[in-house]
Image (cartoon, rainbow, N blue to C red; front, side, top):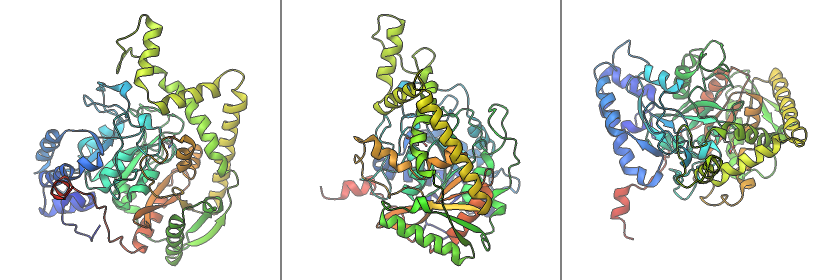
Length: 501
Ligand code: GLN
């Protein structure tokens, strides 16, 4: 952001759009036009979207032009949002980044989509992601990678890379993603936007294409903490259609942002600040912690000795659940079906062989192996035990501190192609994010500076259902740090055409 009033409506946060609508300074149609112009300019480079319906967005905007400024307008009236393509949208293509779902148009909206529409949001389209949300870079998408708006030769993170890049580049005001092991927080950090994984059960998963059901959560991407709070408030809450959604009261998150952290006990996780951390990341994270201390937070060094075991445990539990969840893609009810099979079993096998990409196949095999007779105890059961240890360890730590902080990822955005041949190297991007999924706890990634020219995120984790404290700590940091003063610099199509080859 260059200041509180950026030139294009495409760069304004949702809370500011609302204020502008109230004052009659802008209309939803002007905002949607601005965002669509931005998309036209940068999308050939960024490729955040898999599906965009500009006409529908314009129509919806026009419907809000008169009402969005009203005192009683719903909270997101006339605000353009983007949805990760693993969220079901009625009648609108939903692929989860996979060929196996080619041609699938869900007959229903995910609960979060219903809630967004009820809140007045305008759905622009569906964003790119790693196939079935398996990945940390969007390079596992069957439809090609998204590029990082800060540097087109680097990944935007993943798996919700399209949503993060869209918000960073002004191609959407807000976006939703899903986070099973870090897929909101890591792309948030890589793209310099706020990304929040809520507590497991805080947001309904109904209509989210399942990856690992005991870990998956839907959450917001936003340009600032206030917007993330606003979007969380609109999507959170009990849903009878998802038995794991919790009947815990949803606070008015934006109203709880005081920015006061005096006396807050800030747990700095020793295991997350080990050697091997990129020096630029370590520098920005250290500076962020000092900024929070200057604002009155009290630093408490915390050790979570089992945290390093989260990654191997996750890579048993998540593929195990995935291998079960993905059994349904057999070419029978929806999506791709092979045209080259002699019998039914052959049809299943060929459909799956043609429909799934390499990483998805790898996970199905890993998961099937971990669950098979004779290996179940050695792998799956042990991983579940580690998960329980981690859950307890985090809960205990959060009795003596209010939040836990550390880096989101060990490096900033890495170059496209760098890790595609090396799955283990790719998995390492998740080392600091997966523990919160295993423990079911909320965590936010909030921009906290730069490593060279690339944004860095601070991860702030909190107690179960205490997103309010997590968000308020992030808000305090946002106010304590100097405004970034730089924005992603996407080379537009027009600039490329006019530049000498
Ligand atoms: N990168 C992790 C994985 O590939 C996490 C993905 C996610 O959170 N959806 O499993």
